[in-house]
Length: 166
Image 1 (cartoon, rainbow, N blue to C red):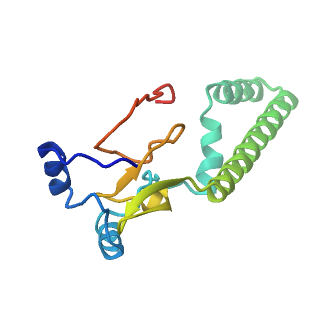
Image 2 (cartoon, rainbow, N blue to C red):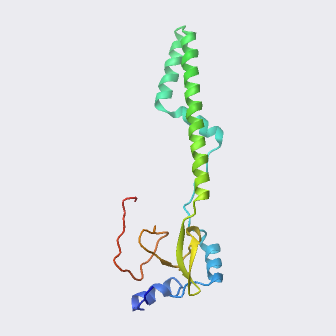
Image 3 (tube, rainbow, N blue to C red):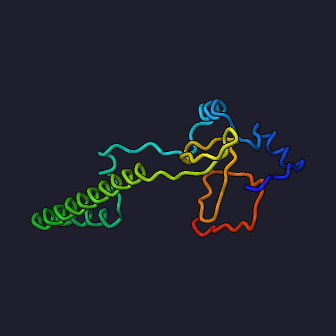
């Protein structure tokens, strides 16, 4: 890394973030992680399995089929009612099972894949999990890196950002 020229703007940014070019100390990182939390997306409270299953019946096609099955029942076609309701229940069960399994697989994959970022801490470069980047960290980016958090760019050389995933 070439030396960063400490312009008045960079000094102000570092001052505002209570940071320095040599990076944060371990104690500062610990305090900031406790104060601001991990660098992760907020997760919404998950519904219970029972409500996830019931939500499958909110599909417009399922509602139409349930309505049609009750019309069959009231018109005396009990066999049609049973057949349509059986198909609905099987369809909902299969849909629920597939979604449940794919969510479990996605969660396992998230646990296995750990994206890391290079930061300067205590005047040395370290690779840390993206979730452990905190306010005031000096992050080093190279070609192909994913921008791991909201950052203020102190210095750049031929910066190109692919925003297509946004």
